[in-house]
Length: 164
Image (cartoon, rainbow, N blue to C red):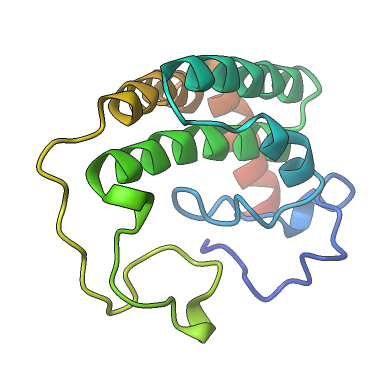
């Protein structure tokens, strides 16, 4: 099921109400779902390989802790932050200043990913090697998370229970 952007994210505690969570596609909701955003975001850094190594290790630790606690929503959010570390580092590697699209995000699309009809800006001639290295580090952790047997088991159980 698609991610539900109509919820009141300022008041919903997804640890208390996992039935409201939808996995969605990719990174959907990564900066909305509480209390996980507050728990994971302080660890998220992708400036260079050193920052990405420390950040991805901290987020991986949270991922494992959520799995151990049978908290699939937390594990999925940690997986999304690892994915976002990869995608944002690649964006900054390919686009000076990290700006990928021309113009502002339309008001009705705020919080959603995508071009939303905007043109993609040209890529830099030479990708930033620090960001390329950071992306590779996050990419390895993201791959490990999305294929982790316990994550897959809990995801299947979550989908069967909530249909999302």
